[in-house]
Length: 97
Image (cartoon, rainbow, N blue to C red; front, side):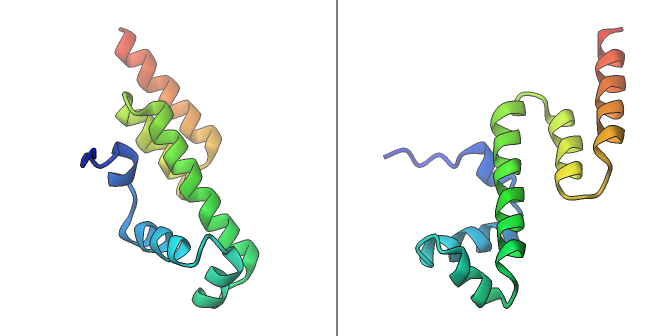
């Protein structure tokens, strides 16, 4: 058995880890999770979608920590996607010089 924790897992917040734990213990039922948290199904679906996006980003960009960090800010609604693209493009330009 491989005891190594995947890179993407270590980037999850404590809240996301708890959400995933409850999701698994609830047999993957978003309706049950919505009841448990006292929120609507679409709210739970959005939370799960953001976790999925974070995992996909880690899998795709694992070797580019700066780009991953900036795109995570987009997923977390901290900055606009267009702003993030500009930041990442400028960063890449500076690395090529």
